[in-house]
Image 1 (spheres, helix red, strand yellow):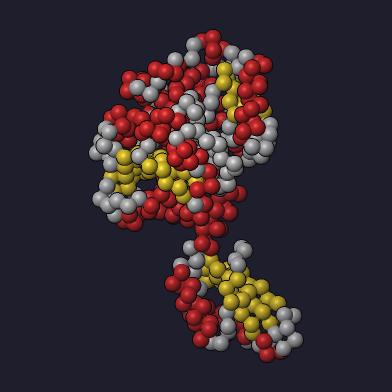
Image 2 (tube, rainbow, N blue to C red):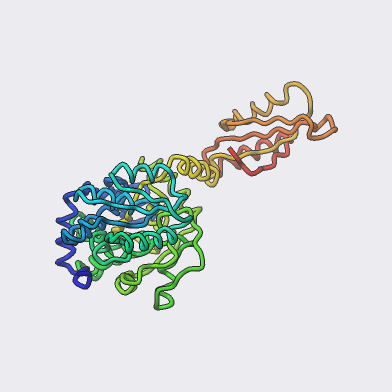
Length: 407
């Protein structure tokens, strides 16, 4: 079955099939990123998809290619997130049983959401690889049909339907940026894009701490990284798919890697400018825009998903504000006498700084002239404003020291 996949005919078939279950995610023109990059940047918001990610496409199309007997056995897969929900939802649509093996570290919200689609969840192992091994064992023992998250040509064909939709809306697209974990999405999108127009450049984007496909393409063979370290958990994969590798290496024009810090500020930009919640893996393609050395091109960044738990979200926002100098903490030493606190507050107010938190330590020194340490956490408009506040404090002899912010 698989050998017949990734053809124009199969992509067309998959595009019709997935329409039954997908939300239409129309391209969003981004004034913000277009102005920043000198290109026409469009976002493909798969974070707005049912289940919050593109994974439903591949899972549902894969199910459509199975025969009744294979479906009746029940399905099994391993996933820490989006693929789990995609398979669970697709199985529900077909009225078949789904077992999902998830690592024990999976956030409760993802476990519950997967269960809400009617799937049976088995928690096993600390990382995806251990969960996957267990899923294979269960498939053998119980006779389930295994659906791989990315190393499956039918799944990759389903994911590639995104390129068909991009092409129909923006036929003259020059660049498509696609996130890479194991490579299923990148394989489907790049293969179809090249079939439709060989001139389209398809650029893969990986986290710098999990660049398994970049390393593999360089080596000319599938390579397993010794470890991965990234906040983009949806793309934290050590080994790219071996079945899809030949297609990805042939059809991707380049791979860009992005540091975690870039994802943190991209989250802030996306929330503030587009009012969209996009998970770290989905932000890879917008963080990569500034690494592209092109102008006046039509570029589509695929936002692969938006499943981020609220606790992660709040810490990413906090980090982003600190990195952008929108929140910072200064320590000043005050003479221990009445009125000094209000004097400092007055200086900050005149510079339009907004005090978020004050910590007052009277026992920092026995010298009564500089006996009180005041730690002030402030909100500013950005780096320039922060420097201005610090300069004014210096001019008033407060000797401010910037300290690590922890709000």
